Amino acid sequence: MRLANKVEAFAETIPHNIKIAVMGCAVNGPGEAREADIGIAGGKNEGIIFKKGTIVKKVKEDELFFAFCTELKEMLDF
Image 1 (cartoon, rainbow, N blue to C red):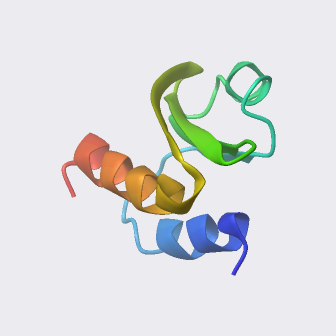
Image 2 (cartoon, one colour):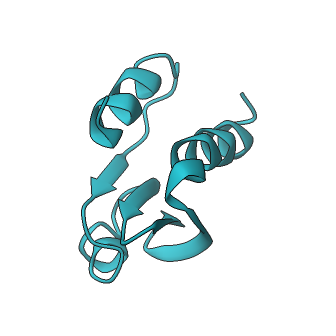
Image 3 (cartoon, helix red, strand yellow):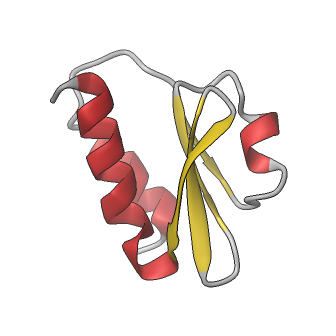
């Protein structure tokens, strides 16, 4: 399953009204999606998680989705 689809499916389980961005570029993604409460962007073998355009975590590609879900749950105290 593609990352965007995984994030979308997970976001549907969140009972909060928040903006989530899924970007394809870790370089431009945070700036382009700075209005999002939280976002995720892929890169070569790694990706980033950002909040309001600020990078909060850089992780390996295979850990990206799990790290995003963890960060989102912590942010929402969910």
